[in-house]
Image 1 (cartoon, one colour):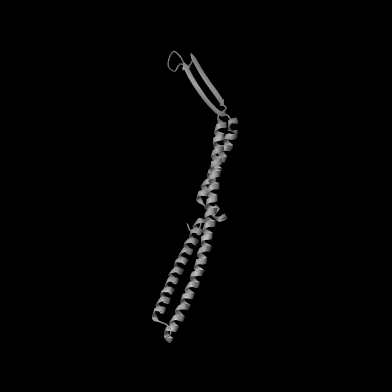
Image 2 (cartoon, rainbow, N blue to C red):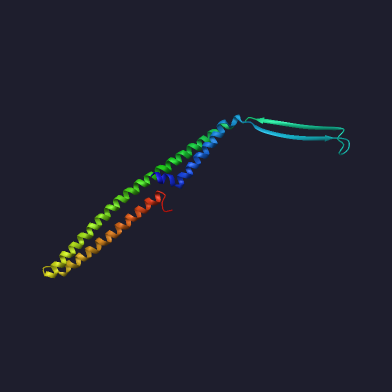
Length: 181
C-alpha cells in the first residue's frame, strides 16, 4: 500500500495541488502587509521654442505604496482550494487502498481456485486410471472410460481458467501498486 501511495500519479498530482494551494494561502495570509511599490519619473518642458529649456522645466518623481486589503478574500479562496485539494487527495488515497485490498482478496480467492483445480485434475486422473483398469479387466464399460476422459478434460479446462484468473488478479495488483508501467 505504501509503494502504491508513493507511485500513484493521481495522488502525486493531488499532493502537488495541495502544496501549491498551501503556498498561495501562505502568501496571501501576510501579503496584505507587503506594500506594492511603484516608481516613476515624468519630465515636462515648456518653452517659447522647441529645445529651449531656459524658460521652464518641471521634473516630477514619485513613489506610491498601496496596501491591498482584498487579500483577505483571496486568502480565504486559497485556503478553500487547499482544503479541496486535501479532500481530493484523501479520496484518491482511500480509493487506492480499497482497490488494493479488493485485489488482494481476489488473489487469495483465485489461488484457492487454482489449488482446487489441481486437486480436481488429480482426482479426475485417478478416476480415469481406475476406470481404465476396470475396462481392461473386463468389469467396466467403454462409456465409463469416455466419461472419465471428458471429466479430466473439464477439470484441466477449469484449472487453466483458474490460473488465468489468478494471473490477471496478480497483474492488476502489480499495476495498482505502481509496478509494470
